[in-house]
Image (cartoon, rainbow, N blue to C red; front, top):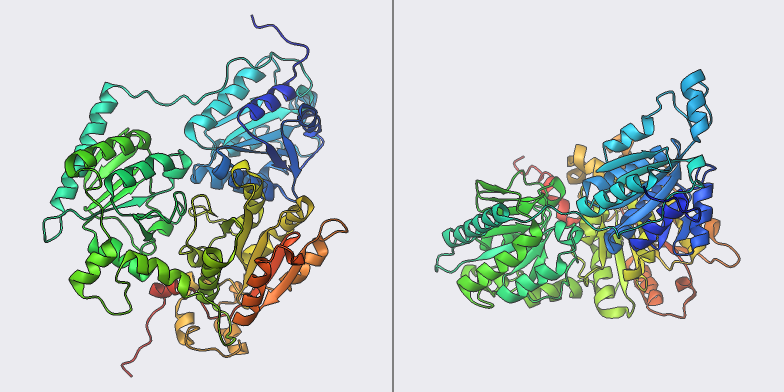
Length: 624
């Protein structure tokens, strides 16, 4: 029988376990049920409490923190807090982010009263397992702790599942249990991965053989293999960036990434050929990935609508290794883990083709073979250079466009600033526009499958506090509609003195992506790329009414959040000269705009859209 240590309580046990996992910040909104735990967390001193204006913002911060650091945690109070946290936890579940959701519930005595008399107290529901039931749908383990003697086992089971499955877990703790004694933590927590035995080795060998066969069967006209690798989200979630880099450096094989795996590895690697996102890709990247390469090898890539950008499926010349298995053409090999596949595939490719035997510049090869038009880059180096050069300073002020903003930011990040930045991109046009920024490893965060609008604002808090990116400034791109969902999280940026820069892309108070999805011909009727007149009343009435937002002066919110000792600044830019002037100020450490968070209202035309979305817009009828 395990002895109860009077010096250890349920609250202290959980605090010690979270600290053991390396968690340095706990995000959340307090409530009376949570108070005893937060008091213990502070007394232990290993974890800093970060109170946020909303539970959703706490979840977003914990999500981003976990993406960078490996695991994160948020704590809320029962029902009213837990249900607000649900959205962020659902996103973490879908996108395989290890997050610990702590929910403090009413005391055991009140639950007994509810069962016996039907007496409800604050935040209670007549359905006694309401919180537990919903969290079971979006976690890999959900536990209710109502007995201090069982607390260590249940806490350890949930945290072990979080480490192993790389997905969220849920711990519901009754208020009067926090200060109850329980045993101290014993053995360290470790992942409990599936064993890799003889059967797994055989399946792995078969999968690797099938990949080599696919490569050989899809060689170019000259008989030389032309595979391209598509690195995906699981290279990040399972911390396999190093193994992936070893593979491409040993073999020389060219690679692209998904949007969700952007900047998981350094984009200056000579094998990096760009971000592939289906029909929304940069035209040059799609040309190489789809037309020149003869087979595609997805490693940790998810076949989601965002990653495939308008394409409905992958073909028989694809490999897709994700979700614990590998499909090679029409064959499937279950229970092949990516961490085993990467080194095995590396060894097989080196054995077959020699060290660096797949090295190639597909831009140069395709250009030489096809005699591509002059506007196509003749080499990979020229493709990369074109991304930076197109965003140099403007000689004459012009109205800003989505493409112009991101081209200019790319030049700033690559050529003008001396600081390290973490780009945090929201959903919709912000994500599409930012995917071609050239960034170092670890320099990009996005939510690419769940796509909860406004995620980026709260996520920037977690990105700034993760130890691995603590010296980097967050640079947020968020649409105006998305920003209206979570703008209050700027309060946390201000209180903590985060030097974030939040670009609010204001396209005339309009849900541009929703209009693009339901009525893309709106953008063809008056092409935003060809017309530079002011928005008119016709622009408003032609739009679907439900996509129109109430206009805000976003830059003025900085004055709302700023305090005497917590500066925040805001300004608006509407043309290229104003954007150039702002970026010059960002490059000057002495400028006051760099003292705290900066809100930038970027004024765009309503019918403008990123060029990557042009495939959705119907071409005008020229037959009449």
